[in-house]
Image (cartoon, rainbow, N blue to C red):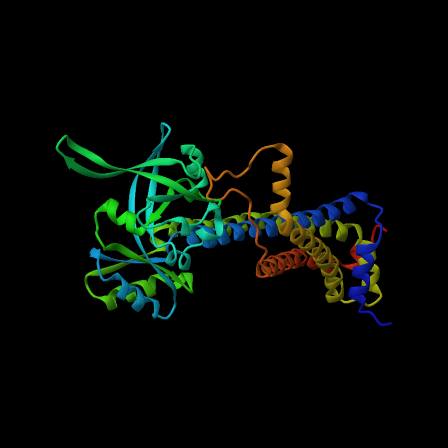
Length: 413
């Protein structure tokens, strides 16, 4: 069967066992470098994608994609809710009242963010019902003054279902005995866990109870919106506010959590560029390998030239050899990288169980485990870049080989 001379000789040079073991070692090292570089890059990109996904699904599943508020308490919010629900791009709308305060129980004090919610409507804009550890959002009944808290907050306050906790609001109440902060005893009726920092700061009460605490009557402070397209939140929210009139304004998740989202995107880009340097180092090893092979094979090159091989043929011989190293290294790196990226979460969880420690604590990070999401587009870009770098690394040594003069190379043979 016919084989092109350059391909045939290039494959023979790659597969042959060389007398010079140092060249073989350098060739193996460059291949291992490519494998490790591609493996690490795919794994790290998958972990960064996992953090990005968790940010969108968990953090932005708990906080509103957008809110619409007025400069005064909303009294006609039911009509506004129906109107906004019919807006294209809006998946759900729920009323809310928000307050900051302190929670205390058994001598423990913790700062909290209190959300007054409609237990039924809240499920249209939040994922909290899917992450209830004990109880349910529907256990929040108007007038019962129940409260749902995160598991980290429950541990900080040493509170369980049925326990009483005291909420202290910064609004002052004037009494005959003087000015006192507003306080209320609430009963814990539910505990949630989303594996994020919100577990330690967020609490929810029925919207009617929140209105009584803040003395709003039948009014609310705003409407929470959940969008079909997360990245269209700002445009849709401000469009709704402008249609409602000058007394309304909007805010969206980019103002509250946009910096975290952008930081993860920036880290992914910078980490990718830095890890690509590992592949570049491995490519320099390919250059070293081929330069030494060219030096070692000067006599063979000269003989091929005297037999009629053109400089172009010699150029392609060594380009085939270097490219083959790149293809094998990239292929194995992709294989091992995909396997590691798809199993990194369970591997880290197993190490945590084995060592009895937790690498990611939700007290420090916004999630408590190492997420991973393999995206084949990243694999394709990494593979293409690695193959391109490997190919470019072959050009100079192959060019040097094509310029060898037969008479000069055979003079001392």
